[in-house]
Length: 165
Image 1 (cartoon, rainbow, N blue to C red):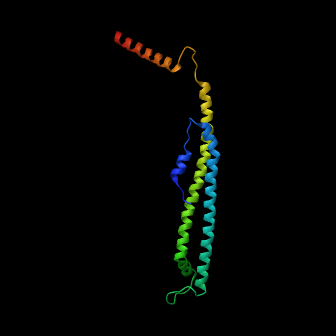
Image 2: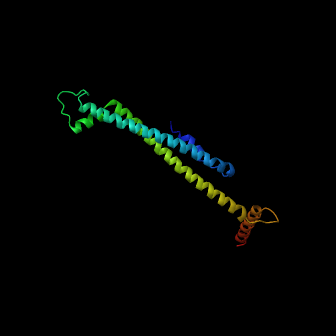
Image 3: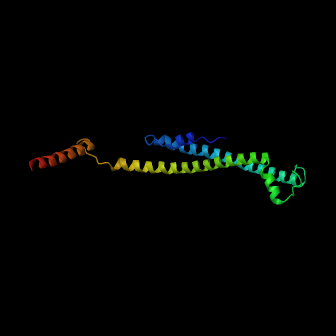
């Protein structure tokens, strides 16, 4: 499974002019990423288990003399650990494990981001509701036009006063 940043960035965006659809999609999007996160976590755990088994197998082979040692190398714990760490299969499994660990971390962060998105949707709905009922209403016409006209009139009055001086 490969983590794709562009997908979640697009999915995290909120269209505040289409809140109903955003709410309808929120749970499904969250579950999609949560499911992917669980899959990656499972793959991470499986890779960790394979890595542990491989390390134990290599160590056992070294201690039983199956692993070819150069010269008269004394089999100390440090020497065994070094040989286990440098085993090609162990290295490959560690790389896979580290990549999966990064991916699992990113999916956890995306899950947190979707929790934040949910809270943002809640706040947008609340604020939008407040705006609808908090706007001043004027039966004689458009409020914005009237306010603009009043501002223009105040500016004109100030200019007239300055011109009279």
